[in-house]
Amino acid sequence: MYKTAIIDIDNTLWQFCDAFYEELRKINRNFPPPEEWTHWDFWEGHCSEQDFYGAVNAIHLNQDSDRHQPYPEAKGFLSALKQGGYHITIASHRSPEFMPQTERWLKKHGLFFDDIHLSYHKTSLFNAETNVVVDDAPQVLEKAAESGALATGLLFPWNRDYRENGFRLCGNLNEILEGILTYESPRVP
Ligand SMILES: [Mg+2]
Image 1 (tube, protein in one colour):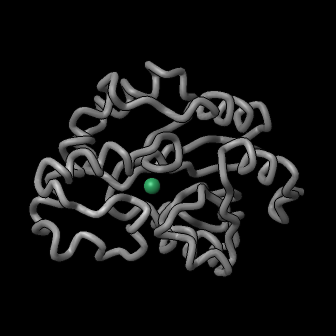
Image 2 (cartoon, rainbow, N blue to C red):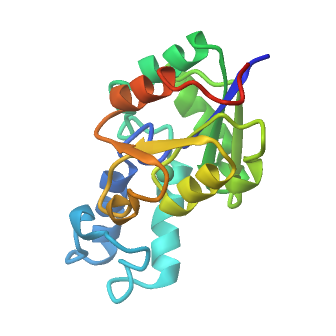
């Protein structure tokens, strides 16, 4: 029986926030930098909701652009999980219409996956069979921990305040990997 890992893309496999900040600065050159994005409504008063989601979509529309590079450890991270016997679902909070460019980006950078899930409700994937969830969104990590999975991700200003909520936040993907590979899931006999 294989183990399952559900892996996020943005701010997990690459530094989405930097590209996002660049987009947001096109709308408002005084937009606060990512270090100040400590709450979900950080954009309020700096751009409209429509601009905000437009900036997200502009990046996802061009996911496979050469400007969007994965973290240097991302390829090895996914390969090591595969070698460790995990079935890997890449799950991103984005419209399924961005599937072609998302899949091209993963393949272009040799980022291994078994399947891809793109939607605005990825927590619906979490069930009693889910062993590991890697994500940066505190709400997603909380749901993962509730479902009994090992919930872990990269530490950012927007999840720092939630770090005591049952999941492990790390400085890089190698640290996350070590945590996963040394974790004995109670679900695996
Ligand atoms: Mg993310």
